[in-house]
Length: 36
Image (cartoon, rainbow, N blue to C red; front, side):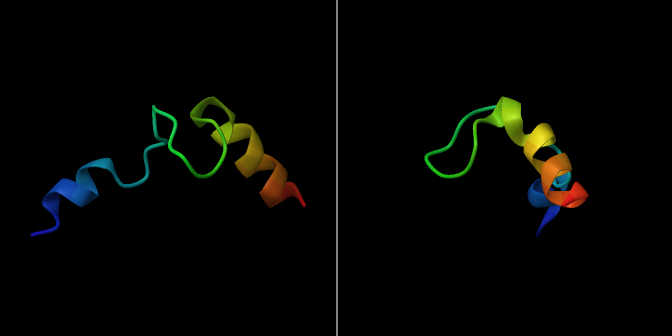
C-alpha cells in the first residue's frame, strides 16, 4: 500500500515546489537548521 511512498522517502526532492526553499538549497538549509 505504501510502497510507492517509501521508494522516495528520505531522498531530497529534485524539483521546485510552490512552498519551501529551492530544491538545490535543501541540504544547506537543513544543515543550518540542525546547527542552530
